[in-house]
Length: 84
Image (tube, rainbow, N blue to C red):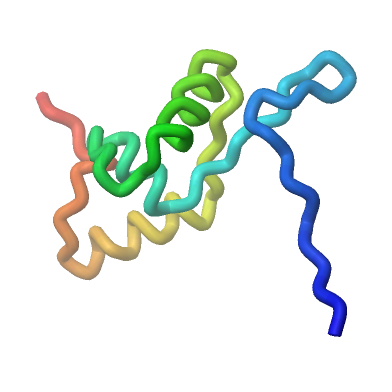
């Protein structure tokens, strides 16, 4: 049986002189916001930092929804909380 996979695109790839955005998974978004680097490899951290410098980071609407639902269920994520 033949398997197919999506082509791998390196973070920071340029297409038509524009940098392709990096879309964070919900967990990665939370880890980055909370400063938790323990779950990520050094190469992932470097790639995230480069994408951030390039202004090419996105978070999907479903990730925002997932965090909001967790908060509504009594979760204690600090992602969306502001300190007065």
